[in-house]
Image 1 (cartoon, rainbow, N blue to C red):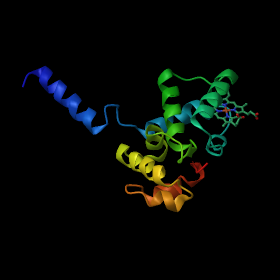
Image 2 (cartoon, helix red, strand yellow):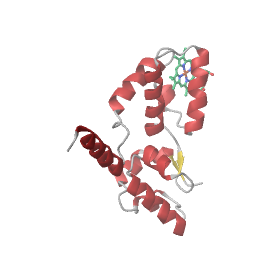
Image 3 (tube, rainbow, N blue to C red):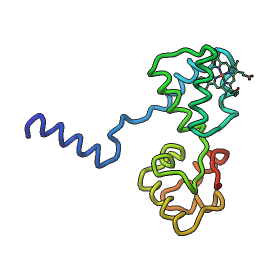
Length: 149
Ligand code: HEC
């Protein structure tokens, strides 16, 4: 196979696998959060206030206006970290991508969540745990982020 054939094959495999983007690195993102967001107040202030991704955008912008500094890469890390660990979600309305990011589930599982709610809306955490591929422990860990309306 030619060099380009190999590159194309690798791309195809990653595309089919749904992992074309670089694998997330939560540890590095957390370090960026610590570096950028703990200069003026402790991180507890950040951890205590889960909110929607749009609201995080506004909050981080407000911190920049107050004088928060960092590289573009660090701010990307901060937003990704907040999205994957501190963002609230309505599991009865969120799209597949948002379910995947916030709940930390695969694309297939996110689609199963949507399929399930299309027949019957979720009314509680137990409901969500009953979907194939959803990890009960992870749902419990994220309970404060999960909403049903
Ligand atoms: C330049 C100083 C500074 C930096 C750096 C900073 N903050 Fe803040 N932040 C503040 C101040 C001051 C307050 C308190 C505002 C108040 O009491 O009303 C605050 C409050 C907050 C709050 C509480 C809610 C609110 O909006 O008042 C959150 C959440 C927050 N910061 C998140 C962050 C995040 C995330 C980062 C990193 C991107 C960050 N902060 C970096 C100064 C900063």
